[in-house]
Amino acid sequence: MSNKAFRLCWAALLCLLINSAHGQLMKAKEIYSKADSLRGKLTPLRTCYDIQYYHLDVKVDIDQKFISGSNLFKFKAVDRFQKLQFDLFDNLSVDQVLYQGKPLPFSREYNAVFVEFPGFIEKGKVDSFTVHYSGHPIQATRAPWDGGFDWKKDSKGKPWVATACQGLGASVWWPNKDHQSDEVDSMLISVAVPKGLMNVSNGRLVKTEDLKDGYRKFHWKVANPINNYNVALNIADYAHLRETYNGEGGKLTLDYYVLKENKAKLPHLQKNAKETLMAFEHWFGPYPFYEDGYKLVETAHLGMEHQSVIAYGNGYKNGYLGNDGSRTGWGLKWDFIVVHESGHEWFGNNITAKDLGDMWIHESFTNYSEALFIDYFYGKEASQAYVNGNRRGILNDRPLQGPLNVNKEGSGDMYNKGGVLHNMIRTILDDDEKWRQVLRGMNKKFYHQTVDYNDILSYMNSSTGLDLTRVFEQYVRRKSIPTLEIIQNKEGQFIYRWIAEVSGFDMPVDLYGKSGEKIRLQPTTSFKPLRLEGHNKEDLQVDSFNYYIGVSIQ
Image (tube, rainbow, N blue to C red):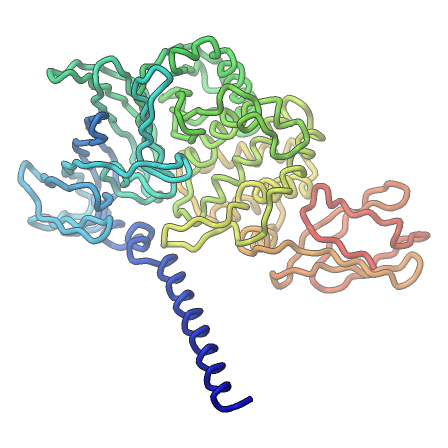
C-alpha cells in the first residue's frame, strides 16, 4: 500500500471512529438528558414536600385546541425548605403562581418549574399554592403510545377528545409534581367543556354547573390515591348506563360511557367488565377503588388504564382489535382491552412503581392477569398455552427494568416475558392455592402504595418461601435467558448445570423421563450429577413449555 493510499485509508477510519463516538455521545445524551433527569430524579426540591390534595380546574377550548385553568397544590412539608420544583411542559405558559393570595417568583428549566417562597416552610406544616396556566397542549399523533391531547371527531362530526400521557408524563397537560413515587391522596377534577358535550374523569361526578359563556363544568371527586398519568379527561356526546356489581367489597357501581351510536353494543362491555371483575377479585382480591367506582369510557384511541375511568377503543371486539397475539385461540374469547386495562387497576394503579424504570411491575403482572382470566373461565392448561403462545413476541433485546432516575422504561418484553416469568414462578411453587394467596397478599400488603424492584422481590421471596433473587436478576435485569445444559457420560449417568449471565444462577426446573415421571432438578451454574437408570439423552424431556429457557442435551 502506498503512503497516499495509507493516509486515505487512515483518514476514512478516523472519520468512521469520530462519527461512531459522536453517535454514542448523542445516544447517551438522548437517554440521560437534563430534562429527563429533572423529571426522573428525586432531588431535595421534590422530596421536601408530600402532595396531599389537588384541585385541577381546567377549561377546554376545543375549536382552538387550547386549555386554561389552575391547579391547587396542597402539601405537607417533609423537610424545612424555601424552594421547590413542580412540573409543566415548557410549551405551556405558567401565568402565575399564587401563595396566600400573592404572586410567587418562579423560574423554568426545560419542563421543570422552580418556586421560591417568601420564607421557610417548616417541617410538618400543611400549606398550599395555586398554579395558573394556559396554552396549546401537545397533540398526540398516536395515542396512547405517545402523549398529549387526542383531538378527534365522532361519525356525526361532534368533538371526541381525550388525554393519554403515560411515559411522557402528566405535566404534558397539567401542572403537578410529576413523579410516580408521590401519589396525591385525593383530588377534585373540574373540567369546563362546551354545552352539549360531557366530560368524564376519574372518581365520581359530584356536581355539574352551567357557566355564562356557553360552557358546562363537570366536577369529579377522586377519593383514593391516584398517580399523575392516570388523571384523565374524556369529552364527547356520550350515552351513559349505570349498573351495580356485587363484589368482594360490597356493591360496586359500573358506569359505561359510549358514543350514542354505539348504545346497542353496550352488552359486550357489560359482559366483559363483569367477567373481568369476577376473575380478578378471585385472583387478586377486592377491586381497589370501590369508593371511586368502575367506569369504561369510549375513546378514539385503543385504551389506557386511567384509574376508575378506563379508556376503551377496541371496537367492541374480542381479542386485540380482533386478533390473538398468542395464536392459540384463547385470546379471542374475551375483549383484550377490557381485561388488560382492568388488570392495571390492581397492578399499576393499586400497586404503582416509584420509578418509570420499574414499569415492568405494572406490565408483567397485568400481562399475566390475562392468563389468569383465561384460567378462571377455561382452566389452567388453556392459561399456560396462552402464556407459551405469547413468547413469539419476546425480543430479548434489553432488560425489563429500565435505567432509574432518568424517566426511561425498560424493554417492551416487560409484557410477554414478564408474564412468562410469573407463570414460571407459579410452576416452581407448584401450589395453585398458595399462588393465589401470594397475588392477593401482594395487593393487600401494597394497597394504594408505590413500590420498587426490591419491594416486589422481597415480598415474593417471603410469601412463596422461595429464594427468587437470582431468578429476578436474570429475567428482569438481564436480557438473555438461561440455558439448561445436560451432558450424558454413559447410560443412566448425566451431569447438568445452568449457563447464565447471573453469577451463581439457581432455579428449579422440571424434567420428564421416558415413563413420563416428573423429576424436579435443582441446577446451579456448577455441574451436578444425575443418575437415571436405563435412560439415554433421547429419553429426557425438559419442561420448556412452562419454563422459558434454552435447553442443550448432549
